[in-house]
Image 1 (tube, rainbow, N blue to C red):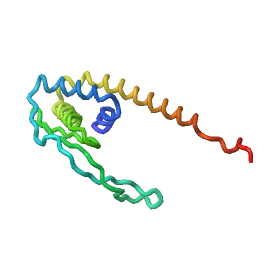
Image 2: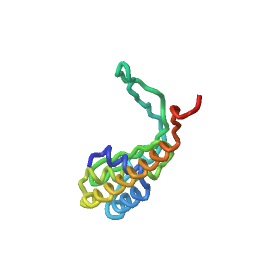
Image 3: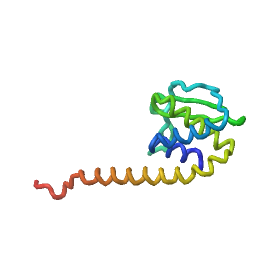
Length: 140
Protein backbone atom coordinates (compact mmCIF):
# COMPACT_ATOMS: atom_id res chain seq x y z
CA UNK A 1 0.00 0.00 0.00
CA UNK A 2 1.43 3.36 -0.97
CA UNK A 3 1.84 6.35 1.32
CA UNK A 4 -0.96 8.42 -0.21
CA UNK A 5 -3.58 5.68 0.12
CA UNK A 6 -2.46 4.80 3.66
CA UNK A 7 -2.58 8.42 4.81
CA UNK A 8 -6.01 8.97 3.27
CA UNK A 9 -7.36 5.96 5.15
CA UNK A 10 -5.87 7.13 8.43
CA UNK A 11 -7.23 10.66 8.06
CA UNK A 12 -10.69 9.79 6.68
CA UNK A 13 -11.29 6.89 9.04
CA UNK A 14 -11.35 6.52 12.81
CA UNK A 15 -8.37 8.38 14.26
CA UNK A 16 -8.07 5.73 17.00
CA UNK A 17 -6.51 3.46 14.37
CA UNK A 18 -3.66 5.92 13.79
CA UNK A 19 -3.20 6.41 17.52
CA UNK A 20 -3.00 2.66 18.12
CA UNK A 21 -0.50 2.14 15.32
CA UNK A 22 1.71 5.03 16.44
CA UNK A 23 1.59 3.93 20.09
CA UNK A 24 2.60 0.42 19.05
CA UNK A 25 5.76 1.82 17.47
CA UNK A 26 6.66 4.45 20.09
CA UNK A 27 6.46 1.85 22.90
CA UNK A 28 9.07 -0.36 21.24
CA UNK A 29 11.35 2.07 19.43
CA UNK A 30 13.07 5.36 20.16
CA UNK A 31 11.28 8.05 18.18
CA UNK A 32 12.81 11.55 18.11
CA UNK A 33 10.99 14.73 17.09
CA UNK A 34 12.83 16.56 14.33
CA UNK A 35 10.11 19.16 13.96
CA UNK A 36 7.52 19.23 16.73
CA UNK A 37 3.93 19.55 15.51
CA UNK A 38 3.34 23.10 14.30
CA UNK A 39 0.84 25.01 12.21
CA UNK A 40 1.49 26.52 8.83
CA UNK A 41 -0.20 27.53 5.62
CA UNK A 42 0.03 25.69 2.34
CA UNK A 43 -1.24 26.60 -1.10
CA UNK A 44 -4.00 24.45 -2.60
CA UNK A 45 -3.61 23.62 -6.29
CA UNK A 46 -6.49 22.91 -8.63
CA UNK A 47 -6.69 22.01 -12.28
CA UNK A 48 -8.77 24.29 -14.47
CA UNK A 49 -11.02 21.99 -16.48
CA UNK A 50 -11.14 23.81 -19.85
CA UNK A 51 -7.45 24.55 -20.36
CA UNK A 52 -6.19 21.74 -18.08
CA UNK A 53 -3.81 24.21 -16.43
CA UNK A 54 -2.87 24.28 -12.74
CA UNK A 55 -3.57 27.28 -10.57
CA UNK A 56 -3.58 28.06 -6.84
CA UNK A 57 -7.06 28.49 -5.41
CA UNK A 58 -5.91 29.69 -1.98
CA UNK A 59 -4.28 28.70 1.29
CA UNK A 60 -5.28 26.16 3.91
CA UNK A 61 -4.14 25.81 7.53
CA UNK A 62 -2.22 22.59 8.18
CA UNK A 63 -0.40 20.97 11.08
CA UNK A 64 2.88 19.29 10.22
CA UNK A 65 5.34 17.13 12.14
CA UNK A 66 8.58 15.34 11.35
CA UNK A 67 10.13 12.47 13.34
CA UNK A 68 13.15 10.18 13.10
CA UNK A 69 12.89 6.46 13.77
CA UNK A 70 15.74 4.02 13.13
CA UNK A 71 17.51 6.65 10.99
CA UNK A 72 14.42 7.08 8.81
CA UNK A 73 12.48 10.32 8.66
CA UNK A 74 8.68 10.36 8.67
CA UNK A 75 6.43 13.29 7.82
CA UNK A 76 2.86 13.90 8.89
CA UNK A 77 0.63 16.68 7.55
CA UNK A 78 -3.06 17.12 8.32
CA UNK A 79 -5.51 19.92 7.51
CA UNK A 80 -6.49 21.97 10.56
CA UNK A 81 -5.05 22.15 14.06
CA UNK A 82 -4.44 18.49 14.97
CA UNK A 83 -0.99 18.22 16.55
CA UNK A 84 -1.30 14.66 17.86
CA UNK A 85 -2.60 13.35 14.55
CA UNK A 86 0.23 15.01 12.62
CA UNK A 87 2.80 13.37 14.92
CA UNK A 88 1.06 10.00 14.69
CA UNK A 89 1.10 10.18 10.89
CA UNK A 90 4.81 11.04 11.00
CA UNK A 91 5.55 8.07 13.27
CA UNK A 92 3.60 5.70 11.00
CA UNK A 93 5.35 7.08 7.91
CA UNK A 94 8.77 6.58 9.55
CA UNK A 95 7.81 3.03 10.58
CA UNK A 96 6.98 2.16 6.97
CA UNK A 97 10.20 3.74 5.71
CA UNK A 98 12.18 1.78 8.31
CA UNK A 99 10.33 -1.38 7.25
CA UNK A 100 9.52 -2.33 10.84
CA UNK A 101 7.92 -5.77 11.33
CA UNK A 102 4.83 -4.13 12.87
CA UNK A 103 3.90 -2.63 9.51
CA UNK A 104 3.22 -6.07 8.00
CA UNK A 105 0.20 -6.68 10.25
CA UNK A 106 -1.17 -3.15 9.73
CA UNK A 107 -2.20 -3.88 6.15
CA UNK A 108 -5.30 -5.86 7.18
CA UNK A 109 -6.40 -3.15 9.61
CA UNK A 110 -5.97 -0.47 6.96
CA UNK A 111 -7.91 -2.47 4.35
CA UNK A 112 -10.78 -3.04 6.80
CA UNK A 113 -10.82 0.67 7.66
CA UNK A 114 -10.88 1.51 3.95
CA UNK A 115 -13.92 -0.74 3.46
CA UNK A 116 -15.72 0.98 6.36
CA UNK A 117 -14.96 4.40 4.85
CA UNK A 118 -16.31 3.30 1.45
CA UNK A 119 -19.43 1.86 3.06
CA UNK A 120 -20.05 5.07 5.02
CA UNK A 121 -19.55 7.25 1.93
CA UNK A 122 -21.93 5.13 -0.14
CA UNK A 123 -24.51 5.35 2.67
CA UNK A 124 -24.17 9.14 2.72
CA UNK A 125 -24.44 9.28 -1.06
CA UNK A 126 -27.59 7.14 -0.97
CA UNK A 127 -29.14 9.48 1.59
CA UNK A 128 -28.22 12.45 -0.58
CA UNK A 129 -29.81 10.93 -3.70
CA UNK A 130 -33.04 10.34 -1.76
CA UNK A 131 -33.37 14.10 -1.26
CA UNK A 132 -33.00 15.06 -4.93
CA UNK A 133 -35.97 16.60 -6.69
CA UNK A 134 -37.28 15.16 -9.95
CA UNK A 135 -38.37 18.25 -11.88
CA UNK A 136 -40.06 16.21 -14.60
CA UNK A 137 -42.82 15.11 -12.22
CA UNK A 138 -43.54 18.60 -10.89
CA UNK A 139 -46.74 20.29 -12.07
CA UNK A 140 -46.38 23.34 -14.27
